[in-house]
Length: 298
Image (cartoon, rainbow, N blue to C red; front, top):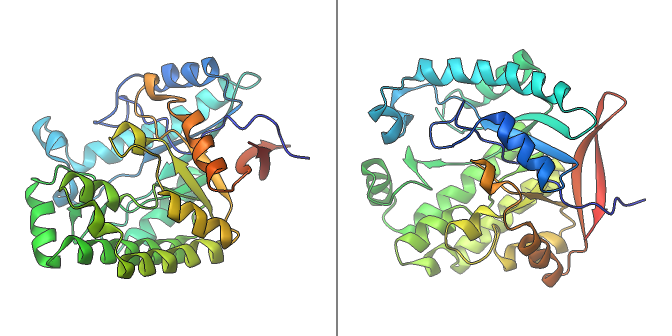
């Protein structure tokens, strides 16, 4: 029987304790999750980027190193477990992490090691880099500019992005696939939104969706797309329609990076799904000590 409470997020809970571009404590974020009526909240801090070239400019400016990221991630793995126990009875807190597909020669081994060593419940599969250029970075970031120049066009950049998404899903089979069409944000910021949705790019996206279907992953509807000026969640309506036709299950995520973002846009995400023919979402939860998948009617 479907759960009537669909207000559940499986990707977010980034906090200023463990993430440089977030704010607030993890405890304050979990309190916010209780306040907005969540019954299940998946916390998924970023895994460390283990080579200096992947440090963000703001991290470098604060003197952060790869060792800083690794130490904070280790602290996060302990803290999220402790808080999950503390919030039992008020909120089911799932302990996860959001992956990175860098460095290209060993990210898979890193994901597997972090999951094994820290005993995380699940992983959120993300692609934030193409040719070492940040996809959701400022378009004027030197590495992003270089990656765009190497690709030759935004369309080619988007093609590489979707190939990377497909490879990521096939390599680690994440429980949740995050902001599937994140490349749309970069195209939008560059004033070339159409370049991320050409027929060739859509074909590459469909191939990536096929990987999601084969892996049995949940495809998230992520409200950060609204916050960042796209006017709708990730993924775009045509992606939702295509995924629904392929039988891919959806979940909801607020991708929160501060307490005020917890629960943001969830009603809009629900409408986004309903308008595109989707009437239920899936989610992960814990029952009798085991992680299980359940459904909720929208």
